[in-house]
Image (cartoon, rainbow, N blue to C red):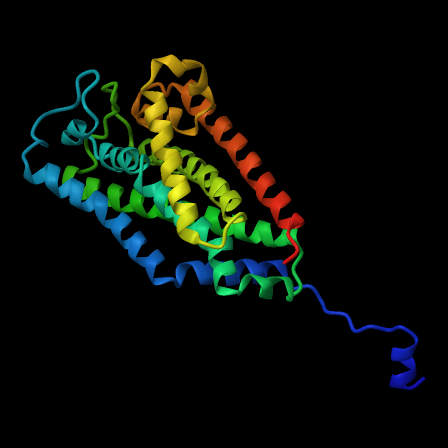
Length: 289
């Protein structure tokens, strides 16, 4: 049978689906090659160093082990753990969500604005696989941001405070291994919270072609949640707000660790992930282009 006869019989050329690992690797290279991503990561890595040097040079690090409940950065006088955890607690309220919102905005809305998102569907890539790749990219970016900030905080804390006095907020002493275990818990918990923010950013990103709309929406929600948490008249709404558990991050430095609020915060973040990714998937599969 000739080629003409084959085409006349209804044969159509097929395209092999792009390997999933190659798609993920391509997405990660795209994320971490953006100059703004590198600049933001550089700023995040420098923040613990600046805070640590400021506290050290101000003379606030004179003193012994913390006695009872001392302010978080004051305990840097005797515990290098206070610096990375304290830095994450401060930046979790604004800067870290802004970083993840930026990545989530670029993932879909940014590519739509540049016309490159359609190229994914020509790969060919299904809508579900496309969303999975984008979600993994946002999750990795969140994990890298938290790990980088924590790593520079730990190194700075060890250099300035040493490893001899690793005390919790409760006054108990930890070994280096136990301290690193607390740091691992901190990284995991904060990364989960940030991925929940990223899932919401992906959902918003499917409704617009303007990345700044996504970033503005996430920041507006962050501010709104903060205002609502200060209003006792809406106490019934507080358990539904993602940020309600963020103030509990210093609990990882208590002994024993009060796991109730941290576990509740992780479950709440999981709900936000499920809702955000479900909306994003529904929106992507309903769009024509």
